[in-house]
Image (cartoon, rainbow, N blue to C red; front, top):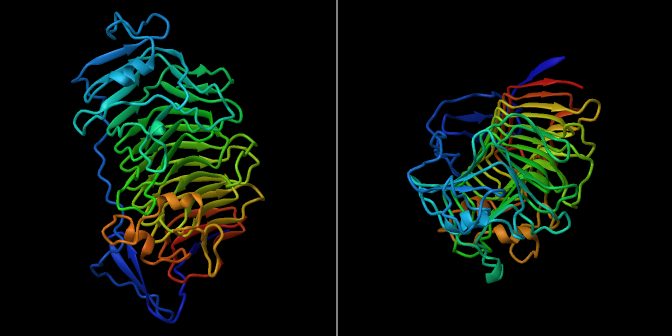
Length: 451
């Protein structure tokens, strides 16, 4: 039986909710009155401006890589290609395009590193040769440092592990005729980043490298497809990974906690497919198809599913008190026990998503969690905790761009989230606020179908 859930009148006092610059909902216990006024938004909603995807710029040099016929002593032209991707990533500068011929390529430990940045008008592009599939293959499953691409500026790491800050990088695969990979998975993506069973390395790992575009890539049997970090270490110097455009990719079978994770801000994640698939989870940190720890990100038009896995995965997780002011819309989340969970996120708008439970197993469509007097996860996001989250924390200084999201308010509540016009089906509870009900959250005009 379908039912349309109306806004819940929470408390006797008047509560205000920001609806992303469109209108302000003023709700009272007695009237459920909706009033249109001009709001003042704090924190601001996502304001990402992404230029529509265009073919990579060919204004600079075109360098070719061929692991069969190439030689790194050649000049990198189509007739005289290089043999290694490392030669290309070491050489390319703004405006250059690296074109890789079909075949398998094995990255060095630590992954390939772009030694130079592109610019907004002249990015560095990495693409597959037309109609040829490029397989970038991790060979070690046990260590977490066998990435495929790495860009890392992190003040906590030794100098030997730092890379140049390479911004404006495009990794773009164009579709090819379907191929069966060595593990039997079928793929028609032009670029495949493939690991092996139990892989512990993310395919792409980044810290403080901004304005990347990743599209048309199959991430198959990796620990996660993309892992973007924020390494501020409560210093004024900012080391967030921001303004990425990640679209039209597939994550198929991941082994650690997240299919993709974005700790940074102002990222656009759209039209991806993220599937858990396997029954293995090599982590104590749970399982979610997508994890957000930053603010002002847009997640739109993606498909998240366990795809038959028996691991208890969440579709999307807002983790800790920095995951604020994100827009989650028009996604399909299916075959999950919990669709979307907030563990400290504030001011997020969750609208027009389709969230479907695993048959006879669904627990909660949208779970909003708040806590009091707790210092364990997810309330261990404080300076001096010694936890991994400490890397992402800003200083107690209003001049830092993350200050308003972390310190205002500074608590372990999920507050001012809006869950609007979603289709939620098959769960025992369409939504729940546990263990504490924070009445600043709004659940409005959702269509709910019971189990």
